[in-house]
Amino acid sequence: MIHSTAIVDASASIADDVEIGPYSIIGADVEIGSGTWVGPHVVINGPTTIGKNNKIFQFASLGEMPQDKKYDGEPTRLEIGDGNIIREYVTMNRGTVQDGGTTTIGNDNWIMAYVHIAHDCILGNDIIMANSTSLAGHVKIADHVITGGFSLIYQFCSLGAYSFTGFGAQVNKDVPPYVTVAGQLAKPFGINSEGLRRHEFSSESISAIKKAYKLLYRSNMMLSDASEKISEMSQEHPELTIMLDFIGKSQRGIIR
Image (cartoon, rainbow, N blue to C red):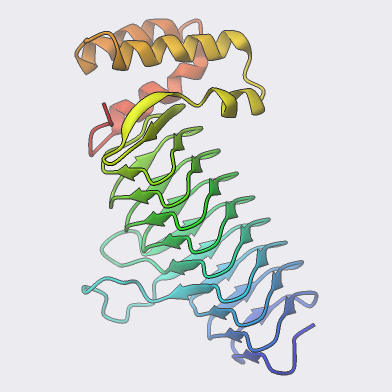
């Protein structure tokens, strides 16, 4: 299952059914789980752990040292979960000791061509990142987020669950759950209604999320007052709780 032209370090741990294509290089301290396919001309450096049933396409570079001048050779990590699709020319860097030391990718994510995921980023599950999305260091992306092509996410920003960034969006603040943003710099443009329907949110839930959005963005209320109103709504609509929690924990401030 390993092509004769591939180079695999003796310390790498590769499950028996992993397929590694021509001219790929698997470095020291790399673990690859069962069912994973690595295409040709892929470079994976360690310490890196890759779970089960991933597909990694040609010319991807995973687990390379972080692009951070403070990095001084520390054994930081890249951890990738199960069932991810990682397309051509994707780059994922390891973490830094100034943060948690690990860049983390969850499960069942679709990472399209030319995406860059910098050091110390944390991605959840079922995320779609369209071509040439770039994440600066320390970015957090929650479950079910979609980023449009050429989206740029500034360092330390967070994207809440089910949020959506439009084509070419430049995001320099946190994006609350359910919210769609677009533009340079990114501004709010309603909620991700189509994404919510695809994830089988009820019409009542979507209506409640729209009302919460209007309180945040169209009521001219202070953020604290809008949050108080949404908190009252969350008693009947618990799907608003993640929006409240996100706003309360935001470090960079939310896009408004």
